[in-house]
Length: 113
Image 1 (cartoon, rainbow, N blue to C red):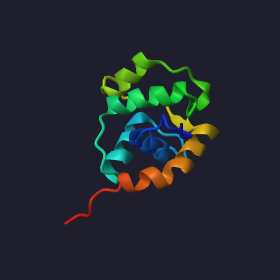
Image 2: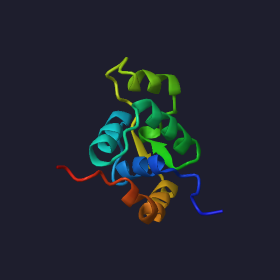
Image 3: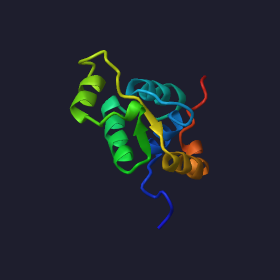
Image 4: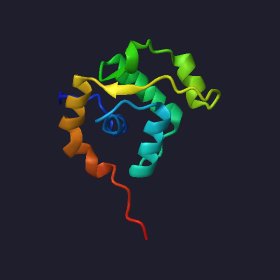
């Protein structure tokens, strides 16, 4: 079994988006859409964030509790309130660094014509 074998390429780009700062799901989504060849929905990102949070790869700013219903409203544009900001834990940073060689080349967008 490989170390961090539970981390998918989408998980890695989420960790990459959070490598240096806390971000909301909308900002994570925008970063992924504009800087990779992946095109996940905000809901797909939320589902992976929930997994990463449960496995202690991510933390919430200001020691908030994870509330999926509020996050569903946020990603469904039912509220403009972006009160949930995620960041990498030490474990998340280690996974991001450890998997960079494996995943970075798989996320590079094709060159513009």
